[in-house]
Image 1 (cartoon, rainbow, N blue to C red):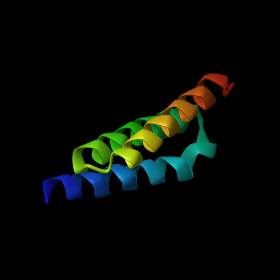
Image 2 (cartoon, rainbow, N blue to C red):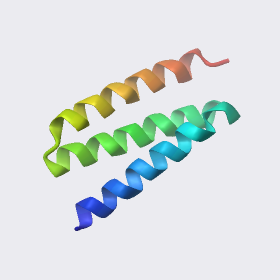
Image 3 (spheres, rainbow, N blue to C red):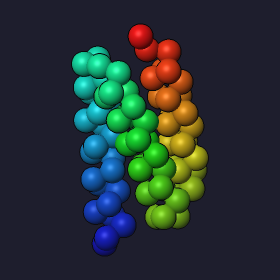
Length: 69
């Protein structure tokens, strides 16, 4: 139950930061952090493909954060 609650919070945070990305560079970094939190959830819950994909998205978001002026 605790892992499920953590997952709901992590994915909700990630999606909220994604929706706010256009407001500034900090939200892009926060989205990357949310992806890492979601990735951890994937690994903790045994859904390792989800964990891998979210880790990749975190890398993509960090790349976008570095390129954002």
